[in-house]
Image (cartoon, rainbow, N blue to C red; front, side):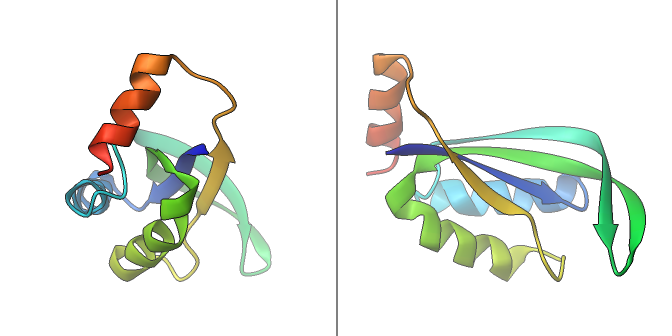
Length: 103
């Protein structure tokens, strides 16, 4: 099963470092970095806000445990956002490309 993994990072530099590591380890076929995402969240008993970078990671479910481990090892947050959503359908050539990129 193919997945999209969403991770927020403190800034573009951290997002890029994580992205490159994921690609080098063949844990992601592609990572999009969306810079300057405004986040509003509940943390330490209060509503907080931050400007973050969002990583949109294309991979496969079987890679998820290693993705989580790698992201945690490079991430500055105590509790980083690492959530995966299934890709229920996609263009066959693109899905074949994901397979090839992860070998």
